[in-house]
Image 1 (cartoon, rainbow, N blue to C red):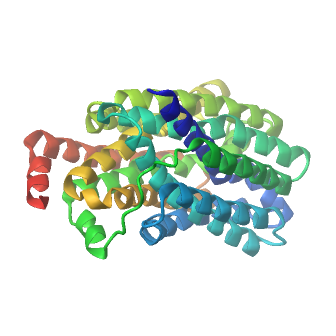
Image 2 (image 1 turned 90 degrees about the vertical axis):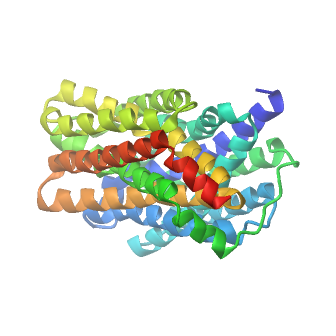
Image 3 (image 1 turned 135 degrees about the vertical axis):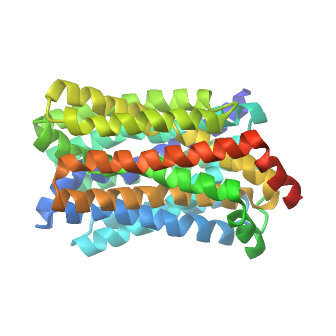
Length: 399
């Protein structure tokens, strides 16, 4: 990989770090936000769910609206929206304003993650795309290693609002990185027609990937959204200890993301099948292991290892399919998959809240396992279609 390509990927990773920090920071701050606004932890959990819904709305709607703007300008524009949203969150006087701010920030997230993936893929040869995308997504995983625990620490020691100011500073640095490191020779955007978007949704292989993304990735968030309360109330860890455990969890996520990028470079759908199968088993085992401190923590770390392992494979696979089936709508395919990621997060975090309120925190584990197991089944179907040549048939029809 050439030096200029590496620097461009670093710029994307820094931006993904800012995005990832703001997306997941609420997980560590839920108890503090709930206390400040005198609401339940479940109500504070809406800061995760509504953020995800904002991405679901922003990715497929705003990406085509901005498609004719050069990609570098698109990134700078969405980072401006990102900064506005997080600045509002830092001064939010009540839960309604905070949720609105989270929604605004999420609009920027959706556009960045969709075009960022295609930019990363365009910078390297086809056989290295999953690896390049994994480098960009390393920003997200590093956010879970350092951004989220550090933000949680700031919230606990000072105020949760200061944590959002911390994100604003990161966003400014990310914007400067985009300005300085991204090449001005990035391909210009191509205006996307409504026909192109509907073509994507008429393709069975692409629809299958979107469903797999939502269920397989989102299933973990039934548990992850309430990870801090689970570690405190079920496993019995002190709040100060949880901050450090989030750091260790983030390390596991980073390792999984890098490994997932390498495993999915050649045959992503086959690698995804085994990733989801193991994650489903781990999540189911949490129901038994979480009440036991040491063993429960081990399985939480295993959950983290596989939580992001599927991301590079899912994102590179949708790009490959779109290039073959609807080449003029690759950015939109990426955007739809980003929407699917966050539809899964919204569904997972919502189900986690419902299960927590009605059955208890511990029951989130088996519900998460069911969601991921559904993804295993759909991945098996997708793999069978690929083996039988059905995807090639779809491609020939599209051409």
